[in-house]
Image 1 (tube, rainbow, N blue to C red):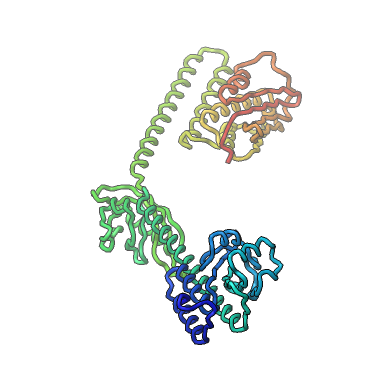
Image 2 (cartoon, rainbow, N blue to C red; image 1 turned 90 degrees about the horizontal axis):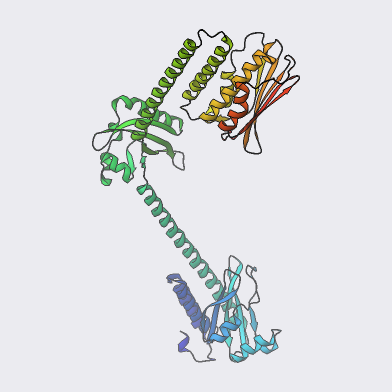
Length: 499
């Protein structure tokens, strides 16, 4: 378009209108932003009677940068990039037309660069999007130019169309980027779902499978295109069918997640135990769309757990038998011994070991609550022989430490029943525990209201077990303080497990 006109030649109104029409049509059909820029430069140079023009836009840093141009040198574009009378986001500024660059207040170096490019007059026309400046287009003239009302009106018309077209192109670019990201995200999700090491499935409102991932299809031997023929309910073990279908139906009726177990026939017709985690899914209008869930084959885990339970049961049985044999041997060995107190003390310690063993057996030898252990060991105080008070947070003890603390509490109780606060009516024993800043557990045994206390003249087995045995078993320490108004024992153990 611009190549058919000589410099200074007047452009008729009809030619201008034709140029604007062609520009509008061109940007409407443009397939890229570069095509928009090229069409805009054609319209600018023809309708505004200039041979040189440029389009500049603010970049992400708010710097005005050349994006398209005609007839400008590399030096000029490099030196004048960023020069603009407006800031990003300025609202609806008017265009600026410079008849003589030498008469402006621009710095001398800018004037020199413009004059050196053989530019005498310029036009600055803002490009706006939703009323805010996003850039500008420039017109350049080698001779003095008077900008009449017609030229100004044409410049604003082109600027509006160009700003709108740039905005539409940006929106389309953003939309395509969002779609590409969505497609990529969907592809990642599909790959993650398809390759997950567990069975992932989705059903429709009638309960038929709409989707099974690879692990699920392999489990049942279903082809990807054969889902419409697959009836998962028909693979449930007859003894589990009522339970599984009933729980699934209840979850749908209540709109709640469900966790269940059941046996299913796999592709080889072997019964496998699956654990299912499922939940209802709903549309935006609240309509029920079906269920989505995950199945995990726990056949081997359950088998291992059953074997472990059998081994624990056998171990518990043998330990109880061993303790019973030890008790029988003790009775026979000490039958003629006149020191019945020593026999009773020994058998009492065996009973505490058996009681601690029973408690740990109940929790599969994993951990036991300190409060439950203390109440069990210290139960059975005769009526009229004092009161035991408990105070402390929930705390889980490992098996080794549980046995050691059980024996320690038994020794303290035995001593209190013989000589301390539990030997008289009205005496009290406080058993308190708490974590301390050093990462340890502190247990405080404190007696009050018993007979006057004096340090023992000799150190018996119980004292040695408390002060030395606990140091080894608990990786801690025990300190006995025989105060006149009651024994105080402070036990520290390195424990983890505060709930």
